[in-house]
Figure 1 (cartoon, rainbow, N blue to C red):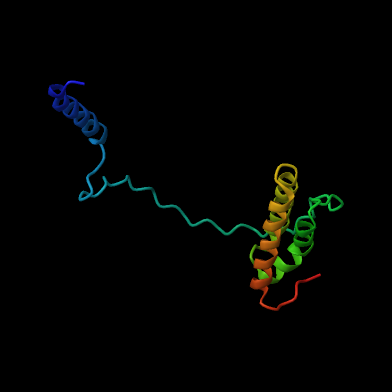
Figure 2: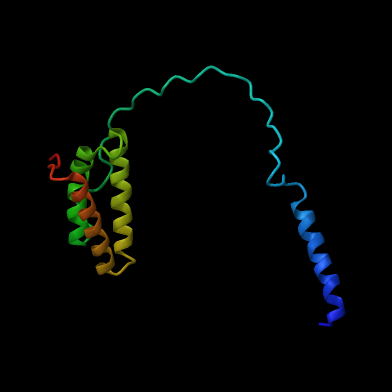
Length: 134
């Protein structure tokens, strides 16, 4: 490239950048006010849902002993910990189990075993010597 064309290139690039940013407010400016939304009555809280039935095939293990052990304690320990609302626990369990089964088919077993052992350790630490529900 010829050096005498460099200032023209810089000027052109600056013009493109300025054009692209022209519709944004600068840092010191307040954004334009949004149109006021009409006031509406507060929504009533949703009705509590009944506890769902287990949606997982319990007979199918992950094939990784550390993961199967973690899953065997998952519900009872999470009920004690209160991490999830009661109506979310089955869905979370099913998602966790499905993820572990899927990963067992694609990841090296030792990676998944280490991950499940870590999850078990974290759960035990969070329980702080409390027992899990059966």
